[in-house]
Length: 199
Image (cartoon, rainbow, N blue to C red; front, side):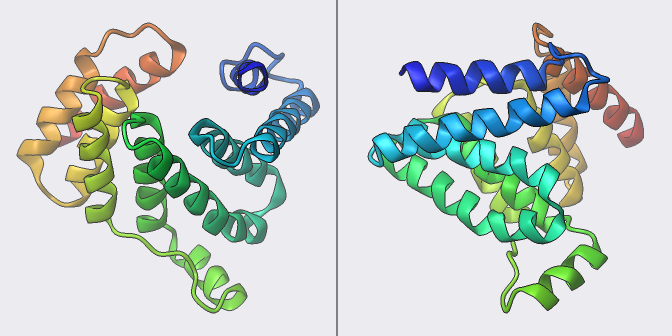
């Protein structure tokens, strides 16, 4: 439990900008520090869903500093740990949401990134918007309205699937979600912009 608090506190200080935004070195150091804590938690208890979840989250964060080859290579490990987290705790909406986000990200991978992935890996990671949608809906079923970003991602996924009516419904929910955190405020702003695009 103590290790998870350390992971969360360290990662939150990076994500919420509590570090000086101009201090890129400090942000990078904290990202790797959070990953070290997550690794230790996983080493201590492989049967703990939160250890798998935080390991996956922090490995993804570290990938931002390692380049596209490493990031894509890590993606298999990330998905594997998220699936283990969900298997250990099927009621953890956050793990389900993150796996949906993983699918969404690989659904919209740019063509040049797909080419790089195909050259480096025999079978690069793939996913569909339908898979992403299923995870986002499942997260919502497990814990309704738990996270503004899940509402936003439902709207964005329906947009990609060209279901304007459902996209508008979820984007409206994201827009109307109480903006408590900085992330909620960003979600609110993006939902507003996307709703304008939908007309």
